Image 1 (cartoon, rainbow, N blue to C red):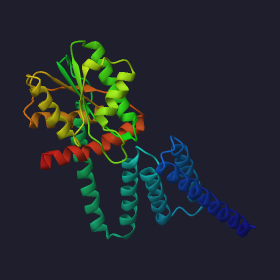
Image 2 (image 1 turned 60 degrees about the vertical axis):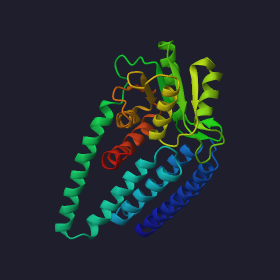
Image 3 (image 1 turned 90 degrees about the vertical axis):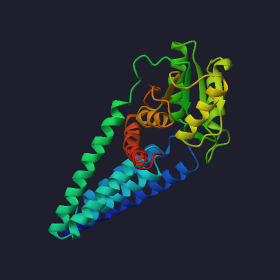
Image 4 (image 1 turned 30 degrees about the vertical axis):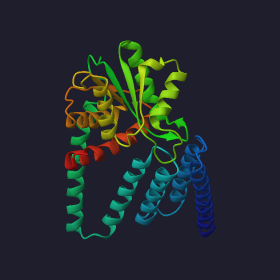
Length: 297
């Protein structure tokens, strides 16, 4: 009787695992071809089935690490905006494997290094979080709207949030003009600057209050090119510039502005998107800030 129960559990586990793989494959295919939000629930369902399959199997170190790695794979490739959650799970899976095979002395060293890394991560995040809001009295003559991904000719949710923040700013400060900045990246059929211009005009913004910058391919180029436009208009960017971007990105945007000699740029935080997607980008931003601190770009 006991053997029959074990056999049934194994069969159920393998069926759950097969269903998880099928859903994961479907989510990957839909994500690849940009089929809206369908990949998200499918990837979530695949993760739930995968966990259920592991629970029916013996939860040893191999099963735990394989489950974490599989979930990491799903988050990285099947769910847009959760890649860094996937990297975090993959890191935990690697720790499980190291705990199994490393000698005790080496494992203690790994634990110490991980603790140091987490302390440093929290240190970097303190700067990011401190600046993840609109500055007091942000009124300036020019608002630079930093670009983000465009899918074909449709703005991504991140870019829409930045444009919403820009529109709120322009409504609040009717004397300001916006420079919508961004070139063309992979998978884009229009420049980010042009996509922002078209979207904001379609949503009621006066064309006369928008200036398109459509060559930049990075945050630094966004600011270099936008500052050049301001100078071409006979003004200096110092004391005249506000920058709208996603909350997690404002600290690094200000660092770039300071590097370029504009030390008083005001930060304007765009409305938040989905909470866990935003946390994903807060995690990623710690690495971007570290890169700036080390290499200056």
